[in-house]
Image 1 (spheres, one colour):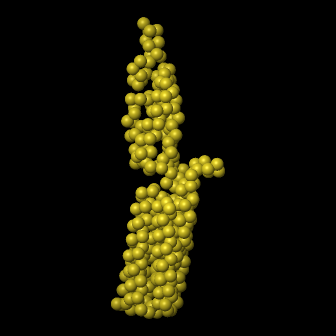
Image 2: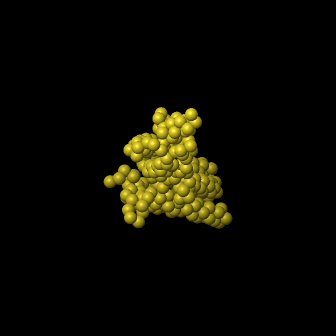
Image 3: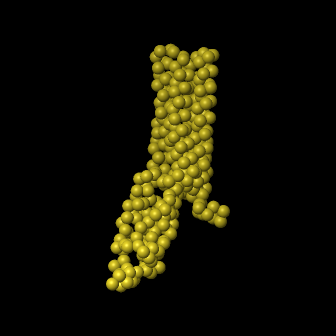
Length: 308
């Protein structure tokens, strides 16, 4: 089984346990903050299921219908996950405001909620840490989005835990919906971050500046073998990167020389940036160019003899 698929399954199972636990305790306590956390974990479960589907599909090789592979399905899933988080935040805000207005349902046994939220923090932290590691190793935007969901759940669960503890010591029932509003604000912030990260590759934006700099440095290592390069273009689909450029080579070099040069540059880029597809369009130099690549250039010799 692919390591990304295995990680997505771990996330699904952990979220099922947390959703059931939070829903049961939140309903028993009449706590809108705990219920909001249950809804948050519910969306985390949906996100984990989407991530599982997307990484499984994205790992399929290119076919006749998808010539560039299936990588962008990870970006689509990440966008859907972010929108689900926005909806969850709106529901939490609605419930919290309604509780502020009605002031009903006093919280019972807040210390039980503290214990449940503390356990949720530990579970989500460990699973999110695992997902972040796999996402980094495999460059998976879907798993990264899932990991951010769970890491946000760690912070919000900690907030609910502190709110319930404060309610226990002070008796102020309004702390429960107040904490729920804080949770919603944190969820909205996370959703914005995820939406941006997932949607930008769908617009075929360039790779990050530091990655493009790596590509340029690799090409520069071979400066003594070509005349110049231009039209460098980059983009990303899921974990897959696409790089293409035009490489101007001495017109009198043999085709084998040009092919090997392009292969070497492509291999070095792929070694530095995994999951990269490199396309290099070779062009002959202009007959009027005055370069230092060729030690013996027939065109230069012709121009020199005519001048004499």
